[in-house]
Image (cartoon, rainbow, N blue to C red; front, top):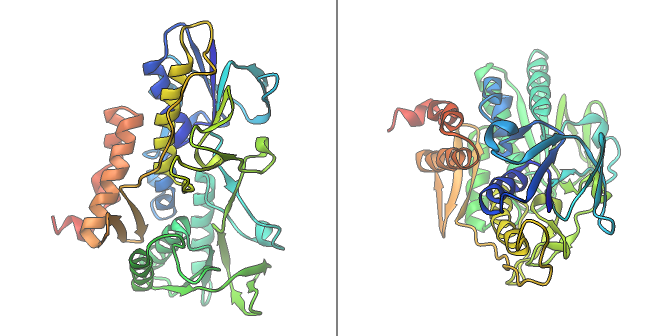
Length: 382
């Protein structure tokens, strides 16, 4: 029996490590990813200001896996009828597959946005955003624009504002959000706290500001306004992986596309057992991976075959809370409470260290040092 996991993001790496523990030794496990490393995506924004953190948020896959084979390749096509995956370096057959390919940046066909903006999905993007900002700071009246005020956009805007202060640049950092509030989809108190934190960091917040197009010097809005932009960062949405034709298919609570193919994480739109849509987030991906690991283990009755009609675990997402960095500040929710300042920064650090400890060894997690993650002014308060 061969289990193939496609993608080594939060869902894929968590799932693979659980399968290594739970599946019989006779079952072969292969993890496929275009990179030999796992990237701690929720800390990627920090590299914009602290490029030396790149090593701390990069986890080499062979070092954290015990028995799974790692295949570095791009997934190009998935034939679920034949149970064959076409890769950039050949093909791979499977008995059970888990599609964890994550999401790509969506540009929605907006004229010039892809050509004149930088997304934030890879280390190279963070480095490009940093170098572009530093170059802009050397000019007169530098203006940086972030399109999209979801959690990723909020974190990018906060880092750019903090970088401008550190470089003593009199820069204008603007975040654009087409919805009425920043952090759309979250509670009103969280949204208000995030907006306050952005404004306290010196970020200009514009809501009800839908982007229509972009060119070399401006971001153009549906309202007709033109926002000057020396550099433009786009975090305005996600789409499915190329191997899924850009779509994010919907999966129900068993997280299956068919009896032998699971799909989870940002690659899909999941609906929980309670009928509620599951948010595209790291914490949802990790929790989905735990459910799918149990299900695949249930299907693998022995090392030779699977029991496709077995009753599987249903997934329901219950979030313990949310946390977002805003430059040197942070905003978090725990239940109905909204936290800021030292408490929120401490929670952010705990989440980062907890995840690294779960997917890597103690030495790697220790590299993600407290002093690197928590602003100095909060460290002094301890």
